[in-house]
Length: 615
Ligand SMILES: *[C@@H]1O[C@H](CO)[C@@H](O)[C@H](O)[C@H]1NC(C)=O
Ligand SMILES: *[C@@H]1O[C@H](CO)[C@@H](O)[C@H](O)[C@H]1NC(C)=O
Ligand SMILES: *[C@@H]1O[C@H](CO)[C@@H](O)[C@H](O)[C@H]1NC(C)=O
Ligand SMILES: *[C@@H]1O[C@H](CO)[C@@H](O)[C@H](O)[C@H]1NC(C)=O
Ligand SMILES: *[C@@H]1O[C@H](CO)[C@@H](O)[C@H](O)[C@H]1NC(C)=O
Ligand SMILES: *[C@@H]1O[C@H](CO)[C@@H](O)[C@H](O)[C@H]1NC(C)=O
Ligand SMILES: *[C@@H]1O[C@H](CO)[C@@H](O)[C@H](O)[C@H]1NC(C)=O
Image 1 (cartoon, helix red, strand yellow):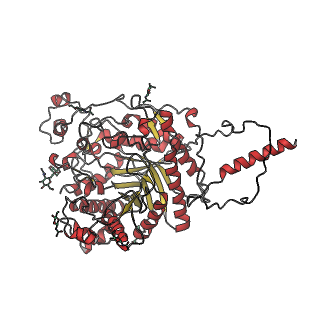
Image 2 (cartoon, protein in one colour):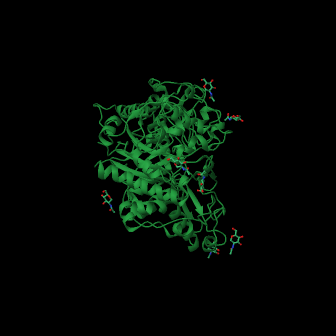
Image 3 (tube, protein in one colour):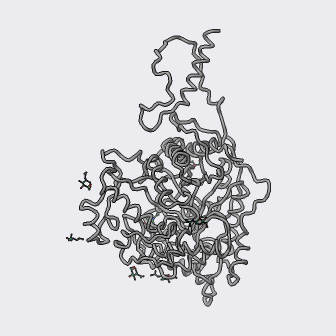
C-alpha cells in the first residue's frame, strides 16, 4: 500500500514539474522553486507507464454557431444602391486566352468584354493557366474529429497570470492574391502582382484555389475555434476598370457577399483589407515595375495622379465594421508622392466612412516595420539611428494620420520631391485611423551608417544602398549573437523586443494597437516530410512567446493592444515563392488538401484558456 501511495505522489510531482516553466530572463531566475535545498532521496518503485496520451486527449473547440442570422452591415448590393446611384453593375466572365477575345464584339463599349479582355492582353502574361483542380465553388465537408486532436505540448511554455480583456480581437489572416488563384476568372482584371514576379518563379495564377475552396477553408478555421478571419478583397475583381464611374462586377459582389456570409454563419467575424499589394495594373506603366532590393517593389501605382480618387471611390463599396485601407504601404510607396497619396487617400476613405456615411465601425491602416533597435543602446548615435529608421518607415505615414503632425524632418530633407503638408491638410488627416495596425514580425538591429548619419544624408543618392535611411539593418547584436532564433527568411523570434515595440507604438502614436499580422516561416520547413512540417515547435514558440508578451504589455505596461491576427492561416504564395511557409496549416499542392500544424492548436489553446472574461 505504502509503495503505491509513493508512486502516486511521484507521479503527481512529475506532472507538477511539467507545469513549472523557466522564465526567459536566464536559467537562474526560478521564481517557483521552493525546494532547491532538499537533499535527493533515491529509492525504488514499481514501474508502470504513466504518460498515457489518450487519457489527456483533448479536441480543439469550435466557435459556437450563431443562433440568429447575424447582421453585419448591409450587403454590398444594398450598399451600392444607397451610396452611388450612378454606379451600374456588369459581368465579364472569364479570361481564357484566344477564346475570350474572339468572342468579344462590343468594341464600342469602353467597359465591355472587348475592353476588359484587352487589359489582359496588355498584361501579356506568360505560362498563364486559368484554373487548377477546381472551376466552381466547392461545398464544404465536415472536418473529422480525428483531425482536431490536440498535439503533444512542448516542454517549455509561458508563465503568465493574465487573461485577455473582453472584446479582444484574436484570429488569423490571409490575402486574396496569396491564396485565391482564379486571377482571370469572374471578371477580375490584371493586378500589379501578375507582373512583379519573373517567369522563372511560381505565379499567383492558382495558389491555394481559395476562390473555390473558401467554404472549406472557413469551416476549417471555425472548428479550430478561430473568432476573427482577416482577408482581402481584390480591387480588380470588384471594379475591373478601377476608376470612378466604371461599372461594378456583379459576380464579385455575389462572391464576396457569400464569403462574408459564410464567415458570419460559421460564427466568426470578418475583417477586410482593401488593398494588399494587388493594385490594378493600369496604374503602373509596364516599364515602371521595378524592384528595389532594400524596400521591396517601389511602384504600386500609388504615385499615379489618378490613384487617390480611384481608391477613395473604391472605398465607398466597403461596408464591414472592421476594416483596413492599406496593407503595408511602405513596401510599394517609397517615393514621396506615393506616400503622400496613400496618406491622403486613407484619410479621405476614413472621412467618407465616418462623416458621410456616419458608420460606426472601425477603420484603420496597417504598416510593416520591423522594430529598429539601437545596436548599442548606450551610444547616443545608435539611438538616433533607430529613431530615424522608425520615423522614416512609420512616422512618415503615422505622424499625420495619427497625430496630425508634419512628415518627419528626416523624410522632408531626404526624400526627393518631399513637401510638407499644409496646416489645413494636417487638420483634415489628423486622427483618421481608429486603430494602429502593425505587422511586427521581428526586430532589426540598427547602427548608423559607417560615416555617420549626417555625412551620409548630406550627400545621399538613391543608388546608395543605405538610401534613404542612412542607417544599417543587421541581424546580430553587439556581441555577435543573432537577435533571436532564425527562420527561413528575415523573421527572428524576438518576443521581448516585440513588447518594447508595443510600448513604443502606444506611447508614440496613442491609438489602440491591432497586430495585423505576425508569423514565422520555420527554417527549411518546405523540404521536410509532412508529419515533421506539422510538428512546428519553433512556430509555436514564436506565437506563444509573442502572445505572452502581449499580455504583459497590456497588464504591466498599460498598453492598449486590441488583438492580434496570425499570418498566415495557411501556407501560401509568398510573391513568387512557396518555400517561405508562414502557414499554421500546410497544403498539399497536388491535392489542395490542408493539414493543421501544431502551432495552430497551441495558439488557439493559449487564447481560449485565457479568455475567462468572455461573457
Ligand atoms: C514559363 O515559361 C518559360 C518559357 O516560356 C519557362 O522558361 C519558365 O520556366 C516557365 N516558368 C514556370 C514557372 O513554369
Ligand atoms: C496612371 O493611371 C492611368 C489609369 O488611370 C494610366 O492610364 C496611366 O498610364 C498611368 N500612368 C503611369 C505613369 O503609369
Ligand atoms: C516611369 O517612371 C519615371 C519616374 O517616375 C517617369 O519619369 C516615367 O515617365 C515613367 N514611365 C512611364 C512609361 O510612365
Ligand atoms: C558610438 O557609435 C558610433 C557609430 O557607430 C561610433 O563611431 C562611436 O565610437 C560610438 N561611441 C562609443 C562611446 O562607443
Ligand atoms: C480621435 O478620434 C476618436 C474618434 O472620433 C476620438 O474618440 C478621439 O478622442 C480622437 N483623438 C484625438 C487625439 O483627437
Ligand atoms: C558623394 O557621393 C559620391 C558617390 O555617390 C562620392 O563619389 C562623393 O565623393 C561624395 N562626396 C562627398 C563630399 O562625400
Ligand atoms: C499529396 O497527396 C497525395 C495524395 O494523398 C500524396 O500521394 C502525395 O504524396 C502528397 N504530396 C506530398 C508532397 O505530401
